[in-house]
Length: 504
Image 1: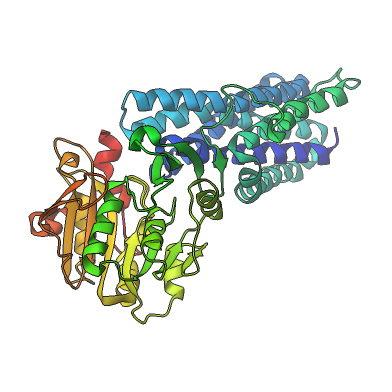
Image 2: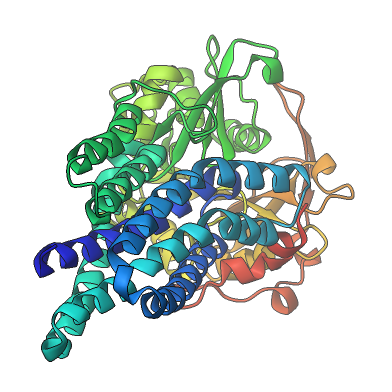
């Protein structure tokens, strides 16, 4: 094997390791969402595996100095096996931990360790053995050999990172990408095993047949898939019937691990989700059936825009939904048909809002881009609140939902403390059943210049029989529990650490 081909093999091995690392976050997302804890686990586990693999690979290089080629080949084949086992192992361990109601942070750490440590360790075996293998052939040029191998590994890591994030996952999906890496390892293994020269081409081709069949959709391997029906650049997406939950013909959209939207087929104004229903109750009380101008931070199933469009087609509705696949599925599966006054912006909500002139324009700004306890910090900072405030009419309101621990609501207190800098009046709403002995509750925060006008105990005036209580913001110790959230400092995961570390 030439020095150039050996360097290419090292680069491809490193690329495969980084591809698996990027995919790891996506494989954990359907169970735990995407958060600082998820990525910390993934990066830490993969680095730990590679570190152990490099150490063991160096030991193997010293022990099998005379037979390094077949050992490298077997390492690639072991890499193919352990890589493809990532799929069932991650699903089994994560599913079991969720059923056991383990604390989210612990469940993420154990799932990541079970799924990705061994494949990363095996990937780490190759570079030290390949370096020693080449040094034996070019002992007089040890410096260039070591530099070339290190550079090949670094280049492969960079290549794998970019190609996974920008190409493979969005085109092949997480499972397809894992199968591709496994097939690549199988091919590389065949090239290193002596005595296979006559059959090497056939073995290499066979190593690619299985992943190519899976990727093309021609073969379904039970247990070796993800829970996703569709994967986009941003989410693992499922569209499922919700008739059993609502008692009506309806469907739900799940983004990663969270049911984001439930849409009624026949009646767009039937709002099953309590927090959406409350936002609509406030809007009905404030504006009746008059056309309104609203900006939605996140689209998902476009449930509320669909309802407001149905009630008054003259309403001016702008929805910032960063994922075009989500929008497409809402159109195709969830009966969302935007009218001439409904505009979807395929960009981050903060970028979209900044591009809108600062003159007051909106009656309502609704923050609905939060996924359970995984919250985009740049959408709750004081700087973002300032953008919202400058674009609201004097009679308008800003409303968002947040999940927190009712007994120690540090994130809620921080939100209120931060919003207080831009809005003179704040209200907090919650369903009574959400705070009765629960470790987590969904709070709806209302910020404006004028009160919502609803009674402190408000029962739904139409549709599903929801009930909400208004919590006195003064009862929440915003100075003792909360901090001011800024672009520079918004430690959302720390503020929610009780939920991450303690579970439900």
